[in-house]
Image 1 (spheres, helix red, strand yellow):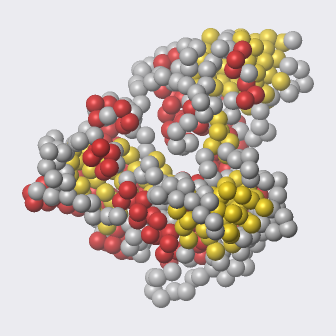
Image 2 (cartoon, rainbow, N blue to C red; image 1 turned 90 degrees about the vertical axis):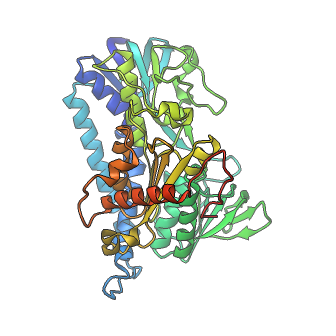
Length: 491
């Protein structure tokens, strides 16, 4: 059996695997990458980005954002075939596969196609090639990603039953769709399919609030916006039974019976670790089957690191990339170590010493957030003020016909430091960038008030949200843990 020795073995070519491998190779390390799938990129390239392409296609063909401009009627006429609808996603998938392969080649990363299996803590066997190989390295990065969770009581082999991967292979648009799960994926697909003109889209969610991790004001606005699109919600409920034949039927815990043409199950993801034989390396998992890591992304075996979806979290490509780069900085190091800020650890970690991790949610409209939520600051007893400015009070927002948009800023008191940024509206994942950089640099409310933004522009929302926050300070309309709490403006 052939053997090869490397400085680093990376298992998986998704965002964490690719960026971790490229960073180590850039600094002169000999790197091997093992990928089992026929295409590079993991879930992001093969399902995530194509889903975003589906969203943009849906918005384009429906004329959604232009529907109220100049009296135009751009409603979707239903003539788009599913093949044409999926075309852009397939094109992007192929382009990303080629781009990632070229990037690995440019960094002289040795790619081994096959399944990685641990022989011991320093050796990985690659199976599935013409001849199995043994790869040895002093550092190993596990970046195998995740797959949709499939509850055993749901017949996924039945017609019309999908998870967030297989929904990409729809052969026709259903007239009605039920979605189990009110998290990121469930809300994104609910918006997408309703904009496409499905007669009925229902979200079944076990909790009391969609996007429960988001700022409550934003999640409330999202639900109201989705309801205005025509999405129906079954909150504090869940699917108890699914019959796929002769026709799809769902029995809910509440006793309700639904008969949609299709069911999308979006109830979380699970780490891809089952085939790795981690026990041979002594690597431990938590109760959910996810890899346990410390602040440097080391597993309980110090030279074995893990990053990306395989360690849990929000399953974001940007976060996975940052985690892998931080892991490689610690493993070798590679010209300067840094630790990712973890807002769950408390305000003492929010010093601007490292990157904050934004969240992007591709609902309609977009949502993006970074830092603390308002309910999080209250729970920690942090005095703070809130600044809000709506898109329909901003000239650029008016031009975009984006009445539902909002920028919300959270500043701690008395230092007036920016602690959280929340955006809902067109280009939210771009608008967040101003606040993200500002928070990393330790900006205060005055930073935005004293900055000259382009006009008209969505970035100018920051100035007026900061004015609003300071106006609340002047009026005493702020949260102080030692004072009687004012009721929030939202429900």
